[in-house]
Structures are given as structure tokens and as C-alpha cells.
Image 1: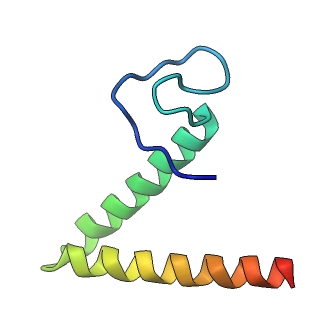
Image 2: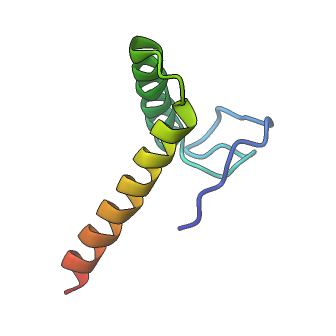
Image 3: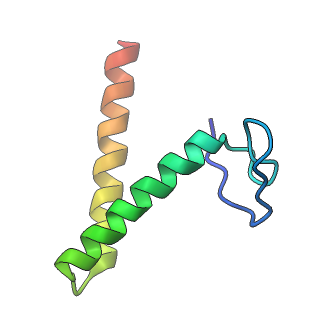
Length: 73
């Protein structure tokens, strides 16, 4: 499944947003993750938040690939 970002044409009817096509549950979970990341950035007041987020990005991709390989193996 490809990620579909918000298009600012949000709808709340049905199971999926008609703007981006994502389920409302996926949108809620993504908002929760974002809120946690922002709270972490604010708490530790990094001088280089881009580096922190790049590190999280790299780790998440690496770990998700490993899990997929283990599940397909």
C-alpha cells in the first residue's frame, strides 16, 4: 500500500477519508505518532531536529524491512 498524504479535503463520513483515501483509523494513528514526535522534540529542544527525524526515519525503514523479510522468509 502506498502512503497518501493529506490533501486538505478531509471528510469524516464512512470508513475512509474521501480526500486522501486513508482510513480514519490510520489518520488518527498517524496524528498520534506525530504528536509524540513533536512532544519529544520540544522536551529535548534539539538544535538539529532534522537530524533526529532523519535518524528516526532511517531506523523505522530498516526495522520495517527486517520485519517484512522475517515474515516472508
